[in-house]
Image 1 (cartoon, rainbow, N blue to C red):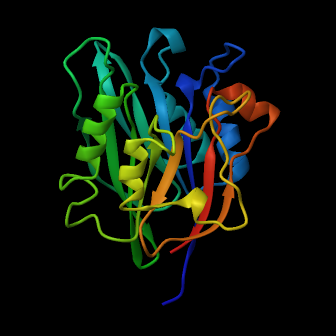
Image 2: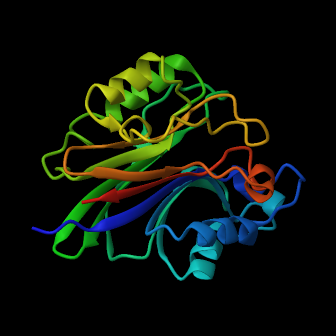
Length: 245
């Protein structure tokens, strides 16, 4: 069976609010367009929020890119929503979108995940994305759920599989090691590229945005583009991987 190339991006877009304080979803869309990914995982998107002109950001970006999308609000207050999305140029079927466990405390932001099945010719890629919490204990809880039988360990979530997003987890952390014990970190799977930090965008010091893959996904190239535009558009840099499936 011949392999198929696929370009994947994960990007925390900070509600499309740049370091210059501009609310600019089309700037984010133009960054995405420049790197021509087939599938994109976006974190920190607003929908219907006053602070960002009540724009449904996932819809606006997807429309500009002529991509299909699924948005899942991690939390909602009235008509205002905040969450994550998957965009795809390829046929996409939403398998599941839902909350991840957390602590019932107002300072702990609710978190969620999305699982889509992406059709690549006669193959199906299982694609999961999330944005884990800021606190260590909730990240452990959320990682356990995402890697458990309701999500990544579900019988329908078979290889080839990609799990990605802003995990708020450094490479030496227990949460990162938990993912790494099951999947491959794409940044460590490419022998010609040194792992690159993704945050903060102006001077990236840490690597907290990750793409993990199962067997059956071969890494061809890695990019963490650091340009004037990517350093301004969000507080994170995008992470892009070219794979063969």
